Image (cartoon, rainbow, N blue to C red; front, side, top):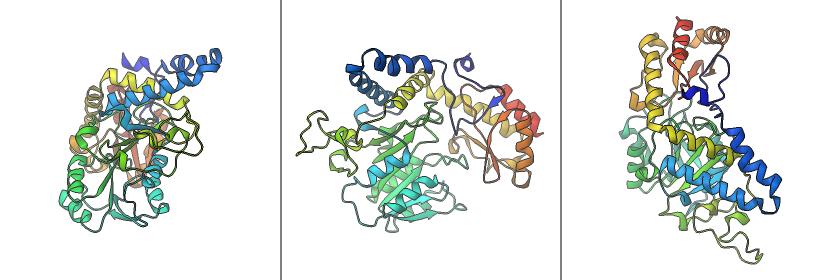
Length: 364
């Protein structure tokens, strides 16, 4: 049983949109790949650690497609976005970026402080409407941030179609997959975006600190990041203080001495999830989600999104009932959270129909 392969707390855990559960194998893997080399062979530990970071990049390639050399480790999405914004080819002093009001606020903060002027698709507009995107993209836009799945609504955007429109207008495309990596099948190569940013703390069950940036190999040589360090160098161990040459792959976006532990942890969880199969995980998630859709009051459900328009999270829009029903779920030890007067519930591969039925019984 897959549930037995994770550190599942008491009750029903439905918070994978926030923090994915730790695989049982993680402590041993971390001991073997991080602590033991540090303890037993400290004189050559960096050889081991850098190999593990390469394995993290290769796991991302297995998960998302593309060559592993197109992935660069980052601490989180915001840090990755800062690096790419200051490394863009033909960077403008003030650029115009299009994004939705439902995008993660942290990224809007980055755009603003980097000198970009944000133009928003409003909350009440239909983000599935491609005519809306095309019209907005024609309005003096240099970049577009496409959030694959909105965290507070659970809505999935038509990423491929938006990218195609943006590319036809020479608009730089950046895709945020923080809420979709690990729960939705993704093919980065097929998308052909310019940049993709993501994190492993949620559906990928990899803990905090293991973010990543993917750079389209067709533009990598045009990118000249400013926030660099010796690991951005073509040869980090050359140690020539008078000459810097960018790494010829996505690692030019890396920086100084890297952290290691988060990527060791995340590599283990990504590898396990790939063994289960992301399509299988998504099918399981959609099956459990549909049980809620069929059973609960339609007025609570956020727009009753079609399966191809939703991510892995179901949003119960409860307004004035929200606090009372949340308290009831807490009484039944059903782990969830609240955003914008709505309850968020996310079934992963380690959840069962019993978890779903407990929610239904409680809210009824």
